Image 1 (cartoon, rainbow, N blue to C red):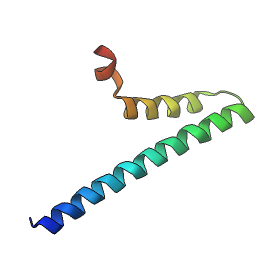
Image 2: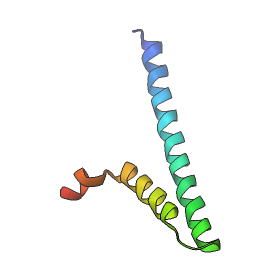
Image 3: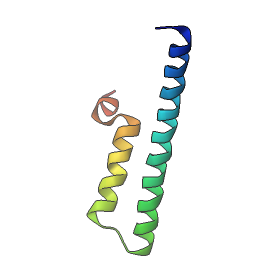
Image 4: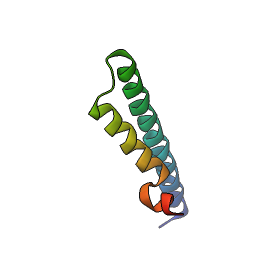
Length: 64
């Protein structure tokens, strides 16, 4: 692979990571707003916990 391809691959990875973080933040804010307006339900808590597990590592991180 040429140097330009490697650079584009790195930039694509960075863009994908930023997009994933923005999406995760949007999910958390959306569910917190829904909890404030409607009340807490299973799905609000589920999505926040799922995002937290993906971002912070889940069981592997909690064992350390």
